[in-house]
Length: 274
View 1: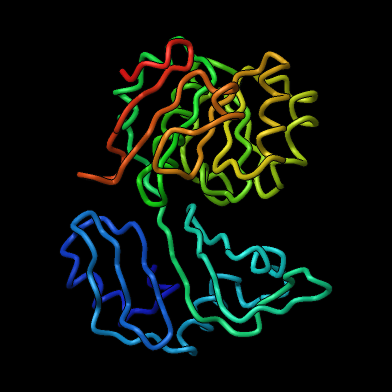
View 2: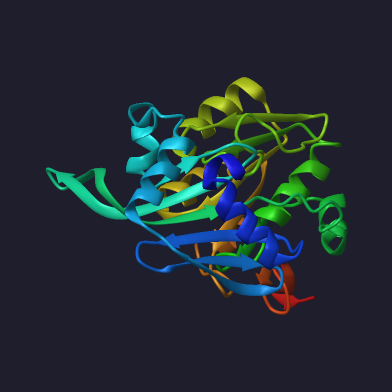
């Protein structure tokens, strides 16, 4: 983090958080640095400048913005150890397609967390695994739970982790997986599913953040092929069709009283909350 933010800012952060876990650092031009921590929101007495944002992005891109052009056009940069930096600003459109940013307004630096043991309350679902969807609003712990569940499942099953944005396993596979995990990173889910299933013959496919009919259709095809699916989805409530017909188990999370808190577990075979 020191390389990314600089020594002075890191010193200020360390002095104010007093050892608390940081989930996100949000930087908005002209506003104070905003920290999201396990102790709540903290605002640092440090105003964000355009120069500061440009320097952070340059460091994250190893001083080669051209090499990261595709990621930046998709609104993020993958940094080291699973850290992802969300980027928004003034965009450039060509023929109705968003292609690049010419000015950066805000960054969201998200830190992944390996929480060994956080899946203990769903261990019975992993023991007799059926298609499972982890549902939560942003920042409520779904990727952390998905990561730990994938680690446990890949100790016993051949698991293919489709890590499109390198959040599940970290850039360069720096976060832990089980002995029987295969990982595909940095490639859109729609381009991976069918090819990788044919070539790797997984028993379970794991993927993060399903979005839109293209993803729904892909996981439906996987499920129909006899391969089980563990995935996550952005929402604050149970899902509607077509996802209910795919996922027998649906785990709904909340950030209250802390990220990863299980609100309910719904099983579509009888629709009862456990």
